Image (cartoon, rainbow, N blue to C red; front, side, top):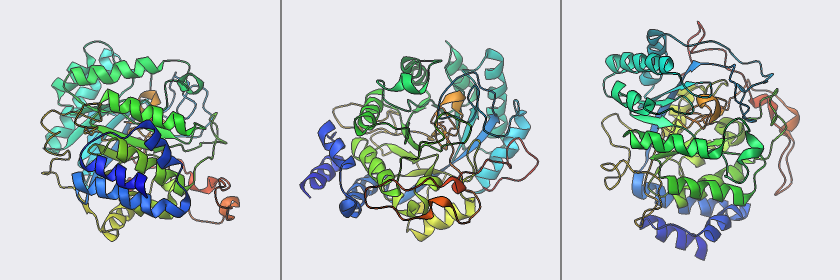
Amino acid sequence: MDLLNTLVDKGLRRELPTREEALAVLATSDDDLLDVVAAAGRVRRQWFGRRVKLNYLVNLKSGLCPEDCSYCSQRLGSKAEILKYTWLKPDEASKAAAAGVAGGAKRVCLVASGRGPTDRDVDRVSQTIEAIKERHEGVEVCACLGLLSDGQADRLRSAGADAYNHNLNTSEGTYGDITTTHTYADRVETVQQAQAAGLSACSGLIAGMGESDADLVDVVFSLRELDPDSVPVNFLIPFEGTPLAKEWNLTPQRCLRILAMVRFVCPDVEVRLAGGREVHLRSMQPLALHLVNSIFLGDYLTSEGQAGQADLDMIADAGFEVEGAGTTTLPAHRAPAGGGCGSHDDGCGSAHDDGCGAAHDGGCSSHDAGRGAAHDGGCSSHDAGRAPCGDAPGDAVAEPGEVPAARTDLVAVRRRGAGTDLAPNA
């Protein structure tokens, strides 16, 4: 296919595709899906080999957020029956992080619900960062605390934070339909504050909220211009009790096309598979490893994820390897500058999040989504969980091109790990 040959050539040279080419990737047929994955996989291997970076979320403060992000289980007015608790103490958060590090996580994402941190909150998180760094020398720490005020990014950097996650989530044109308590511009400003303080910026998106192909391309191109180091891609987890509970718009095939498009637009950036992968990719998760070079390990902010050992087995079975602590994630041409998925002449080169990805179950700072980060994306983010196996109303096979019935059996609220007395599944 001429389109794919062109995109591979551009990706290997770090040249940006056109908007028309990005839209064409999303419009490819299921018959061409494996060709699309193989093409984007060539670009992924050029810059990241077969390495997979593991990230681990710690939800420092869960629920009761004053923001109204429609996708978030922690939002104002949410009826989702999630865990609700106030700030974990530094030693509690450090112990929670230890589970992820023991499982091979190279980055720990610290997420807290809320509009943004107070100065006292920054002090709390700074103490937590110091506790984690003291216990795990060399581990990366990404904070996802919401909208930042002047000077707060510098304080987090001084405390030892390596990165900050704040997702854009969706296109500027549709942002007001998803959230009304803050603006798209507010999010952009926070990412820029993190970058100005010398933090590695992590910013991504949430797919599956009813957006169009043009919206998806808009937000990815906006991320390219913002130039974060990592881009977490979250897939909406439609939590019961939230405004988007009925939005089941994704198939495994569409998820793979979205990930391929992001890889082509950001060829040498850390693309993180974040919240919702278990819910929407299901048995096709291993194929996504040919497109992304980073995932979250274990549970998300407010939903259960795939068991940590299952993640490790999946990586090994698919022929990939866990990225070691001593390995630099970004390609050499990007690592020194710490740049991200930007609009530089040399290409989107840039990478970034821990992707805190912000998991989107609800979190990052009350807003992002992603498994990493919980919610804002990110670290943003929007969790995606995996519930116990069993027959479900959505098991019927859909016609080609038809979105299958909702698999609500795959959404499970997190009841273990941070904020509980039970061990996590990392």
